Image 1 (tube, rainbow, N blue to C red):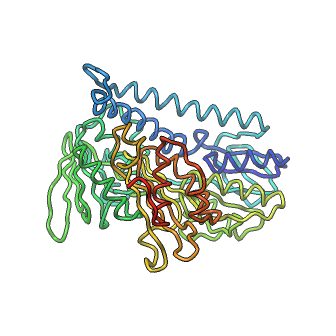
Image 2 (cartoon, one colour):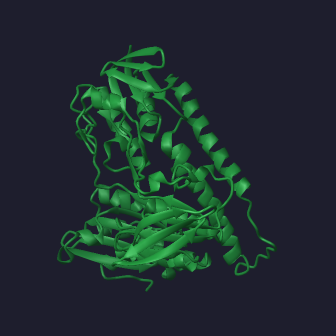
Image 3 (cartoon, rainbow, N blue to C red):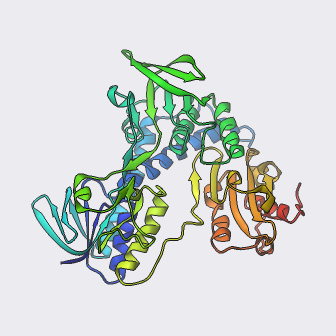
Length: 451
């Protein structure tokens, strides 16, 4: 008898299992494929490994002479990039395997079939448990006509490529689409991005999307906003896509098509038969409890905020509630990160969501930052939204090199309701990119020093 069985070893599942073990519980994890789930094998980790390669390549090709470094005949090798990616993925999987052994967690390989809330079958093995955590993750969304055409990629398929396409049409200008557009364009490939909504990165403010758009266009990316792909015809070695806007249609020929319109929860039949409430994803309360006693759901299967770091957080919440703690999820300070170039990171309220009469909004340009100048970087900004009366920080957006690391100051400020003066009274190291955050904070008080 296990205290808990976790189905799925992605970020939510493996973190929940480790925390339960740390809290003294006997735990098993069932995994049908590779340890680490989508994030480790088909998402966060391999994408960032490839983007690290292309970012270095682009830095060398565009900046080396400015920095006094002579590099001749610069080139890249896709096979070596993929070797780097596979090495990092393997290290991540081995790391999780080590942590399972360290914490005495039983890893059971195979497809889980949930019989009821206390019994799971894996192949011919039967498991009995007091608690069940559903951490099945998600799968790429693909729909007609793309699901009927041979050779069209989803984000899962890109990592299997053996050669780079000469050109690629990416359907979807959200996070996944923009990261892959950055990868292919940085290697000199022709990229088209088709976005149905008003601008790429539709979940972000338009000023953020404009910086990303400008950067991609510098790389030769053709961005078609408010466009829709209505038809695709496969030729011998390419695809012809009909793209429509306001009744007008144009044709785009590309070597490959990538459908990157997001992901949806993976909910197999046994979960439906279990009787949990499903509304797009498996419904839970803020403690990660479903409507069935001692059954929890975490991560992408909930279809709430489908991010790896949110799944990890929800795994912690579920684990503590299983051992009797009263822990509830708090989502007011969830960071969103995009590994474009420059990087993008946001937390809290966005400008498009608030009444401008009730807040003060301050922006500080990356071009005015001393460290950015040493790096030959000038695109981007830091934007801070503060409550007008209290000067409490409500939202932070960063478009900058290293934005994905810098956002933690904003996360802490939003989560703990910090005021602008608390942040400006904190000494920021010089010269660093974090001084751009300080500049935006000073702007809330109307006293920016460096512009």
